[in-house]
Length: 335
Image (tube, rainbow, N blue to C red; front, side, top):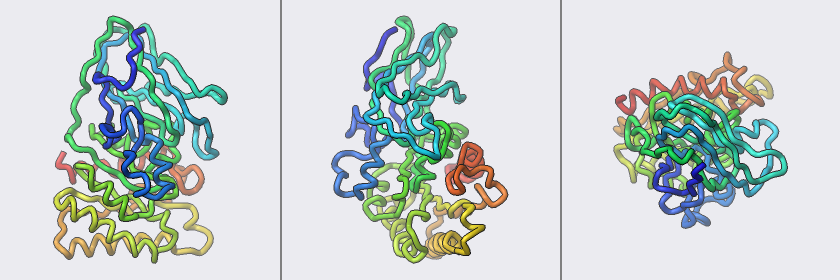
């Protein structure tokens, strides 16, 4: 094997928009934002959710070397989704690499003895754990080339909660952003933060730094009350609009949660109203590049088998969300 130390110019990093500032660290925010964004958001940004390593190769053998700073495990999510690195080839899932209970270092072959033909390789990084990619291995005669271009050059930027971050996909390539990105050949950035998608101004300013093809707002549940969401939602949109006046924005009301069928609360319904009103007001102001998507149209009460714990989607739920967003993004991006 020819083990190529990472980073290397042969490997394209997507989904980590500040990569030129952070490399070789596979993280979602650069050091200059520490102390600017909330501390809990900063900690979660150390996980490379949505990050991908892409290249084309005719390798007959392909391997990976990883180091995990910690090996904590979650109750409602498989370790493959939390910690794993997913191999997708030519837009199809092949297999993951993930550590065992005791060893933070992992070296494994994804495949060996395959025909020497060009393949588009995409390695989806783990959704909920920091990781160090040390090297990618190929057989010594293999070539490494640039991957195919995306349908549009700028990424779609998603901001939101744990659902946005990827809870609870079985593996990284089945978050809804990854699924819709694969289907439409789109680059994307995942700025979902578990429990911390609260719409702070600092996050809007960070998001607006990214030259995006579209911004997708998928937050509300972490705000606690409709009143708090009311305080932050419209200003969050305005902050982005001041920096990016012509970039499309898609606003998603929250998907169904089984908590809505017991407990007697109208919290989620009231939050949906806040988002609808904010979008309607921007429409009235002449903002023609903002689109409302109803969460129930992505995953509603009849789709509850698509939930792991009553709130977070499983792969069935994420696939439904991706399929619901496909026509929206296709229209917004003129694909």
